[in-house]
Length: 241
Length: 284
Image 1 (tube, rainbow over the protein chains, first blue to last red):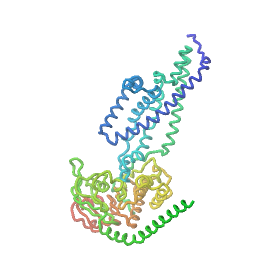
Image 2: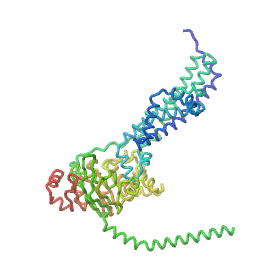
Image 3: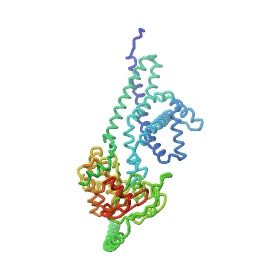
Image 4: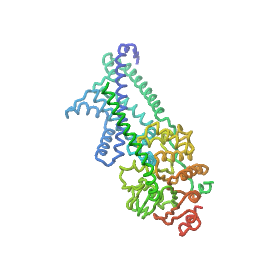
């Protein structure tokens, strides 16, 4: 136990770490956007026609993605799909795997939010002549997202942290850079301490950003409280004075 | 140059023709319009015949016949479970009827999803629980349907929304969030939102039942004003005073049928059936 950490020796590799960080950032930004969009469409399809073949297949895909390890999904897409004639670059495979994974988890989160929306909101939309899609898009979706926003934020951060795995298929992300530096310098302790610190800062920054976006999107503070139902006889005596 | 001039001359000529054509149409319009008006004044706006509806094995409506003429205010009363709300919800197809026929403004409703947008322009609805959109400001609540369903331009929709909100006494609440309003104000916004589609008939499903007693009056005043303006109203209500003073006709429903109906004064003073007598005894 007389190891003296030597952080300054990492300095020459700072550009590699920053490049890796940028890769992690753009991968996360792209896949969270696509993943949430995918979830929104998946929830719509499964709400619109819950018993259709397509919806059932989607449901099975969601369960498959939620119940298998992410690294296996990634390896399947990168190493397995070429057997079917579909060869993808490492970055492309990473984007697809991360997007599908986030879409699967967040579609279940969003579905809970949509299910929790009162029937009255759908009926109000319908009574005003909105189509089901318009009701979903303009009436139901935003309050459902708002309701589930903390859970969705967490899921997005989980996907960012989980993206470390894509280094295993040679995507040059932050973890890839750490592995590279560690193998060059044998400064394992220093490399991973610095990398862990960068992930931590990235996660904190991401939460702060998402919270900020949330406040922007959901400026309406509180959902309408459920109206109290009064006994009609009370109303009768007071009314129409 | 000369070609351009020729084209523009042609243009103005054709638009001149269009203008004069339009003028001709508008000139002849008043005659046909008023003819239509007297025609539609006689024809019922909403007409139900032999309407039936069951929820699973439970028959809720067992053959309803009802005609509502333009400008009429019809109150539907009855115990809970008598089918009042279901009847109302069939008229704008929130529930699909099993048998019988519903005509609104002369059109037969066949329950297809397709005509929901068209139906919404004939029939507006206000709910007991307001159902305002919590994530949209008051003004946007009112503007949403005209813009999405009718394709009204934003500035036109906004002008109309301000007009409608002023009509229900909430002109200054355009930028408020629904959660910042009292129940009575929310319900009046809901009325403005329904009116923004310019429906021919407004369905009100116990719209004062969820309100604090002191807020009920404001909402009823709006309904009275609508009646004065000639709006057709069908209300499921527990407001017997309102039904008597403002309503043109009262329908008493009992066990899925129209048990008794007539003008409010007679019906409340001399109920013909034992069921209505009991009901009135319980609520008045």
